[in-house]
Image 1: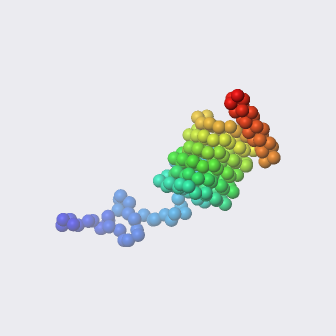
Image 2: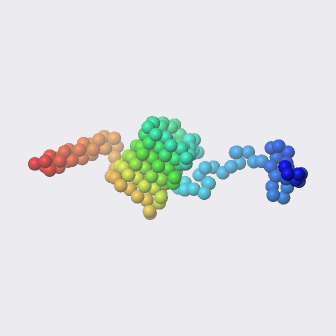
Image 3: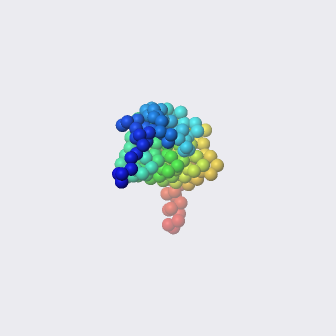
Length: 182
């Protein structure tokens, strides 16, 4: 264009990238890329759920759905609805969830507005915010310095004990509202 010839060392055969010195470089296949958890971002420290199978990206908005995953789900975008995973749910630092979350393991670095039930482990990292109730196994809650929690926490209760505790709390709330009405 404009009568200028582009030097041959800049022009490479199709599909063969060239570095700044004009040398051909080998294109790396996608399998050589580092895993999602090692790319300059906060990753759960003790999450043993294997690889992330589903990623909801930073610029993705999912509204009004029930998401069900058999594996691990990572949320870096915005989700509203309900989330269930057999393995793990990871809410990244840019993730915002307005949903109840149920999974074996849950790690929060972003914001969650809803209740969380983690049968094995619940981890809230320094940038994490949870506005809702938490339920997990005894000794399975890890809250790092800087994390924010607004809600109640039930730890170590099996299903029968949890229902009993909920019914006792509902009865107490009913009594206090009846007393306030008098």
